[in-house]
Length: 284
Ligand code: SAM
Image (cartoon, rainbow, N blue to C red; front, side, top):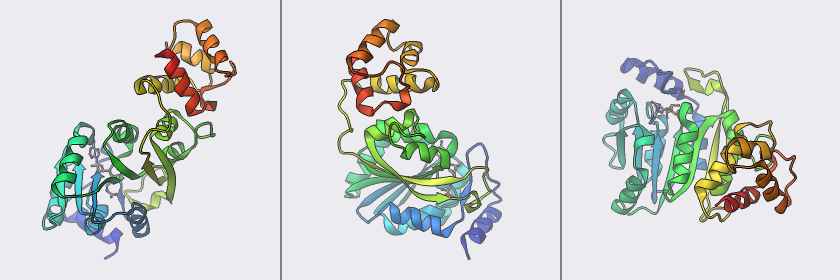
């Protein structure tokens, strides 16, 4: 049975219709599944966290390769299906919860210790409606992850893999660049899913740095400054920082930027991560 047949068979057997609001588009492309699993470089020393396992297509490959796979799935119907499919695997566990509410730090620490595993990795075909909050949680919460290999919408992948100052960059580009190296590893057409989504996708791999790329006094301030600078993309950095209430007076913003040798007409997307770090430290 190929993946299209298998997916249709499981959906029929359990009388499943995909939920649009939960971002359910099931991957049915064997080559992409293999590409994700191979690029994630999983071994028996690894704990894999899979977010949104759905019907279990990726899960079945991950279980063969990893020391332990912990799936986090919000939809109870999917939880029942993968429990049926994989409960005989000793290295399988599923948690029926919203991933944004799970204490991942504790979960990872416990599992690494209990199963004597060396690394933690996230592998997932993400629910697209919460891509950014999931990725930010995985990075900001300092989970000790080695890598994050995830399918996301193509345009989001381009922003995540862009370098600061590049033409696709957005606020999240800088946050990613602060924590990790990133690259697009597979381009995926919308025909690789059932049901077929309107958008194309891409798989991105984030390899986490041991230490953030730049040193700042307060990380929250750095992200606040970056966010404010991208709120109004067409505005100059001076106006964005002023409108975002980063400092109270335009004059002070201009003096600060001049003292850093930053052109007053520049827009946020042209700044380097180091320049954002200097602004954040000044505000602190
Ligand atoms: N991994 C499967 C695949 O590749 O075929 C399904 C991927 S589908 C794009 C996203 C999955 O995330 C769905 O199973 C959906 O129920 C689940 N999901 C949606 N919101 C979630 C949340 N907040 N927490 C955990 N899982 C969620």
